[in-house]
Image (cartoon, rainbow, N blue to C red; front, side):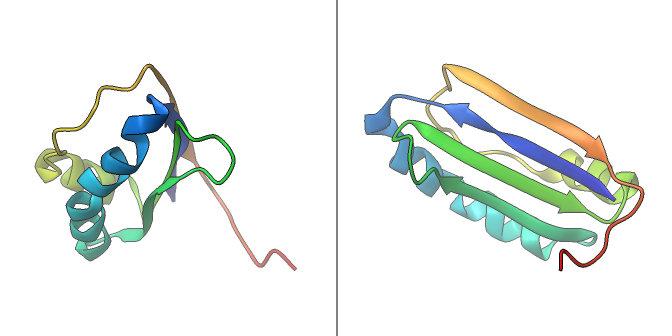
Length: 94
């Protein structure tokens, strides 16, 4: 399992438009083979922060998606902190 998680920072005035610009990408990703979860959301505390989380079945699914993802035109972030994690196991939280 591959997890892509992190956040970006833009001017607070641009954040909601940025999130909306990614709606099509999120929709397409969720329909892609091997996508277990994909979200890009406005942070509930920081008005300039967008949180992102992707979970993919495996590296092949992620690579296939990246070849056709075609991201939208959106405001360039001032800061990006997004990382890839390779998860070997998972289970119920409680």
